[in-house]
Image (cartoon, rainbow, N blue to C red; front, side, top):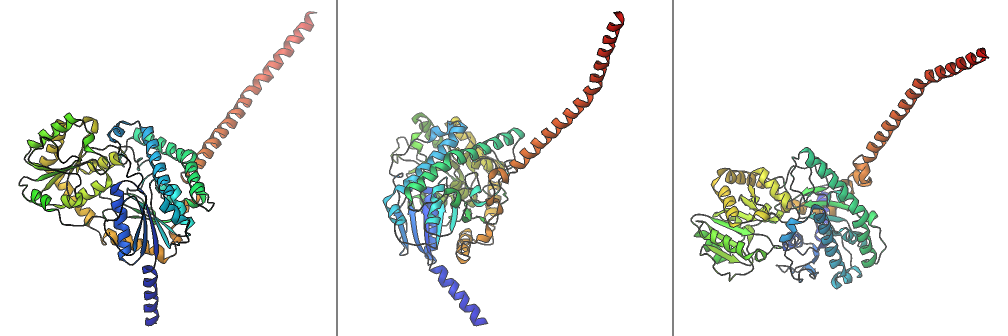
Amino acid sequence: MCKLIILIFVTTINFINGAKILGVFPSPGYSQFILGEVLMTELARRGHDVTMISAYKPREELKNYRTILADDMVNKPQRDLFPREREHFINRIRSVHNLGYLVTENALTNSGVQNLIHSNETFDLVILEQFLNEAHMAFGAHFNAPIVLFSSIGISEWNSHLIGDIRLPSIVPVTKTHYTDHMSFFQRLFNSIVNVCDILYKELVSYPIHQEYIDKYFPKKMNLRDIIYNASLMLLNSHVSTTQPASLTTAVIEIGGFHVSSKKLPEDIQKFLDEAENGAILFSMGSNLNISNLPLTTLDNIMEMFSKMKQRVLLKYEDINLKNKPSNVLISKWLPQSDILEHRSLVAFVTHGGLLSVTEAVFHGVPMVGIPIFGDQRMNVARCVRKGIAVHLPFQELTAFNLHQALVKVLENREYQDNSRRNANIMRDRPVRPLNWAMYWIEYVLRHNGAIHLRNASLELYWFQLYLIDVIIFLMVSLILMYYLIAKRQRIKGFHPQVTQNTNAKKLRKKNKLKKY
């Protein structure tokens, strides 16, 4: 019996190590690439044969790790994204879907991707970065392989429906708002309306476009409605310390912070931070926003403000030869953000509020000044403000004076430091490293041939059935009909004596006329 158990165990390990896995991570954002690469390289280290569709080349060469570059969007000139902060809410929703269309079609038109689709290759599993690219769900059906979704953000209206997770509009805000799970009545009302509008937009506009992509770029005939809900599992780059408590189905696994690791800093940065006797501030607006797009007067005033501070400043900026650079400021086009945040000298982080940046700041216990611009950044900053680990500085109010006031608030109010350390302890207090947790669940899907038993019954319902819209409409119509029938019956009863009285009066008048003649 013991030998049989050992044999089964060895056979399982050999099967898992021999798995062929396709990773589809087409996002042009470098932060998203980092997350995808950490996940896929770890699978390669564990013996899996990995093929990665990506916008960037791998940072590490592994013999069982192959990259198919889909970098057309990366090579295009980068737009100034700061004006997106002033977009109307409806335009925000439309623009994010338009980005999804671009990312989806850009990957599918790539020659390397088309060669793969038309090859005879097979895969045991497809891991798909999910961001409004529903047509890419066809990779799973095309290769007849289970799908594991990966989302670089938490549960949202962009991904929850694909895995059968139920989002209550009363406590789960739409991603592009600045709401948290504590909403006022009018916020809940607005949130509910926007949820319905988003659903209708996906059903009437977005899904037909993605169906066209499937028809155009895949040789097999596939119906989006038949394949869109076939994911076995969804991995979220989130955690209660960075987002909020959520009621997640068994097929949704949170692995926020899985990419964080300790690496040695470059010598110049290490020296700069080691000698920061009064602490250091990191100022970075992420990989998609260029600080050089700020008005020159604003940037000059900020530099002047930094020169008067006792802290040292690390600035991610596109022009390392910036004129009038203060002596306490170090400028670099790229900064190892997580490793800098880990340094003991870091006392504050000025950030755009992307979830990757927020996760790293939370993990290392560094309070933030959040200047959100687009996407999920407003919500991320709002959550951090509620946790007492960040100050929100609206982009339209970004001046040297306001930035200084926000930094002073974070630096001099002890609560921000204490709350950040407490939140870091919450993130770190886990029984299993999040990357190992991700590996376990990915291989779980492989071991159980897609793990169909994790599927939620809500996937078999239309959205209006799931949220009982049809039941509510039925009850409302029934009540209206019942009221109408009761009112009609009362009206008939009420008028019947009157009709009899009028008839008798007519007879009496006729009789009097006869007597007169």
